[in-house]
Length: 186
Image (cartoon, rainbow, N blue to C red; front, side, top):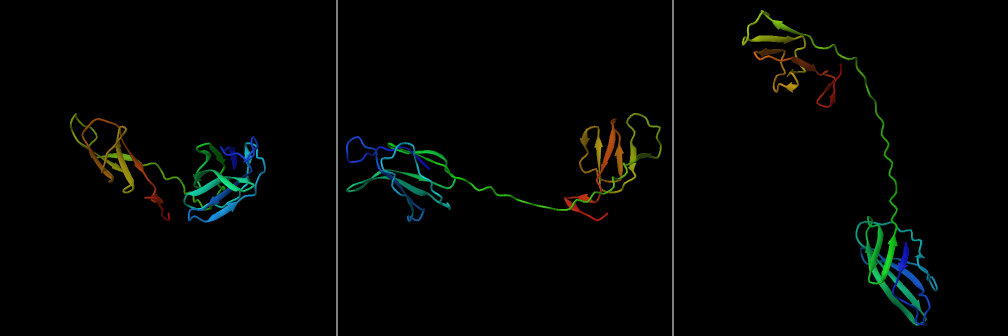
């Protein structure tokens, strides 16, 4: 923590303040009182190692005089505060260090053989006239999705597909080993 400026002076004319810092936790308890820096120059650096919890902390900068002390001002901070805090003529820079948390994870990946691509064959007569219907049949009977050109045919997940419109029809097969985010034995 660095005190960049404070609008308090010693009682003697033209002498620098004798600064110290007091910190209260969110419950109002004093948790830090630093030693005094006599005739402090700015920035006045105070190395404070304080484990911060939730809530707002109060930091007071004081000037120690021969006959007591005077407050130079208060600033408030939390465990997520950073940068320069100001109050009147007081400027304090707080540097809150957040510890690095390392997460380690391990697991096992099983790679299965790639399934054979689906085969589509027309059922029945293949000499069709415009507007007639044809039934396409896939060699897979489950875990499939039919498409026309680049569009999914919603609800068409069965082995047979009846078509009467021109287009490129194809289907996608999903191995039962990886359905709905769960691993099945294959």
